View (spheres, helix red, strand yellow):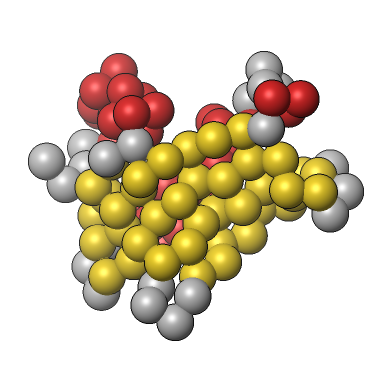
Length: 96
């Protein structure tokens, strides 16, 4: 069973980290401002690829952003590609 935690430092930089049995297998690095979440990178460990973990990180980030009334600046190629591929799904949170 995987768990995703948003872990930020005092400067509001950090990541949505994905753990399986307390082992970190994926992360989505972000920074947070009062009205904006910037996504820099999404990565999954090689042994965990192909299990849908990047998509789970994306879904967790989107839930967080919507719950906190934020916009997303998708600098991460994966997130940007998903936003472009499904614009209707992310229109409300996409900072273009």
